[in-house]
Image (cartoon, rainbow, N blue to C red):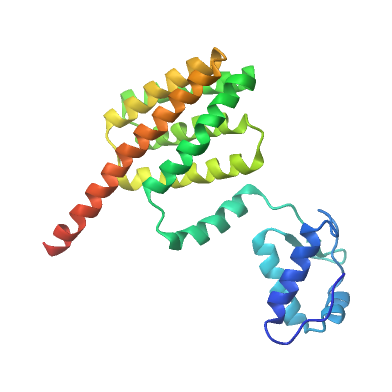
Amino acid sequence: MFEAVRPSKSAQQIINQIRDAILEGKLSPGQKIASDRELTAKFGVSKQTLREALRALEYLGLVEIRQGAAGGAFVSEVDMDITKANLANFLHFKNISIKDLSEVRRLIEPHAARTAAERISAEDLDLLKKINETSQVSVTQGHSAELSRNEIKFHRIIANTTGNPILILILDFVGNLLEDAKKILQPGPEFSRTVVRAHEDILAAVAAGDAEKSARLMLAHVTDVGQELNQLEMSQKTAEPSSNHD
């Protein structure tokens, strides 16, 4: 399954071989890859180089390093938190804008709302109702941080009804970026009241099983949110030179 690596960038070559073996199904979650002795002999590298590669694989979430006599490198399933962290590292250098986030939301979230209207469970409906009730209280009492978390949670629950892990990951990641953006842009109380009203309308359509109306309302909602936050973002960028000049 593995072969000796070239001296140049040997750790990266080990990472690639083990990663490929996992993704191709040659190694299964929970399975021990091999002993350190076997791996160093197979790859033709030192223990230090092997450990460097295994630590990188552990950081990627593909491998778990266990200590003790029965320890070693075991295949693990990558969880969503690690995946989002890796995505965040990549996108950090891409200058993601509110406009970018809004475009993704307009493409995906209406579909999620349509699906929710068709298959949402009674339990998830109750969760959405409780989120909206809590959001109403937060708007009244001015708890902006809690309100922002609930706004994102509302969309996550709707996304989860699709059962599509790719779509769920994308919307969860976009939701995190959006929550971070709100902390910086700090939209006012009227923005929050508008969001809560939109969520109530979407919930009513989903609860009624009206798929097309749910999709239509969701599209209008994420479009409005995107436009409002984009205006705030542009205003802040416009204000930066003058504030630096002062």
